[in-house]
Length: 377
Image (cartoon, rainbow, N blue to C red; front, side, top):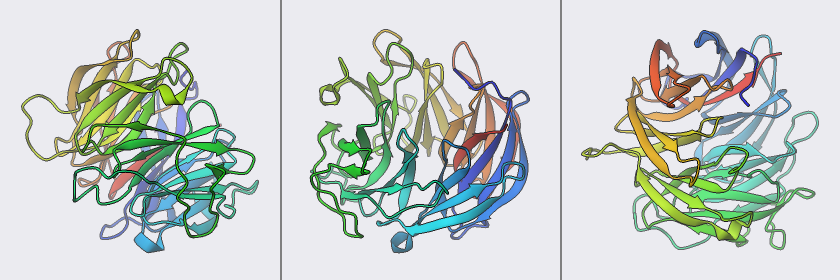
């Protein structure tokens, strides 16, 4: 169920290189009024392109996307002011980390390194500091046909589903979602071949989900709802601007099979586009995907019986290059970050249809690329 509290801290990750951004910005979001109130710079840090709040609410972790100098940073959160204090920073053990998530216990941080095509696991200590990596695995497989974008493995997303024994990795370069066994006691992936140094192993995933050649999987959403949680996998294809729906007839991850591929773009659009983000509403009824180029949010209804998608609308984001968007914990609003127009646009979500209506609030922030919420006490 959506959270009952009405106010949240919001942290916005940005790109600082060749922009006016200084790092991570903090806001307060009121879900009754749908208003973002700025609290200023939370932390000055280089290119924090993905930020996540720890389940405890005490710490925030950022992927500092800086090529060979990339790091993962841990910050302590001062809840009243929104200020962040750096407590730990480690090399990302790869190039250009673009996604972070936690295991179900909150004891580990998963990192997807895009350019180097590897995924890393770091333990989280009680004080929020990161420990030495417990796993470092490079994705392996057949490359996709797009010579420019699929020149090697490119890990773009990593999460564990409702259980804690498997880790799913979307690899844009391989046209696959790789599924690695995860050992929560040791923090290892594919535990028979684990590397904990700066050199990655070549451990094979236990299973994989294969997409059409040239799809370029970027992010993934799992189905929600009491009856269908985790039964359907929705894979956003950045290169093909599509969502591919996979179904599992049971709990076995090796049984996923494709049942639908649908475009995120309206019919007749022929311009350049890169799909960017995908999310399912907390009520499980609607799916959203962002388009960079068409500069829109595609809204889909999810069939409650078979998991298939039906287009509802395409809504302009009120800016350029919506690299990311987030649904607030109340489920009432969607916040779209337009990277190239330096703004965040707030939309009201229609509870009945899932449709989006701009509230009129547009918040200026330099190069916004990610949002993370923290519920206030």
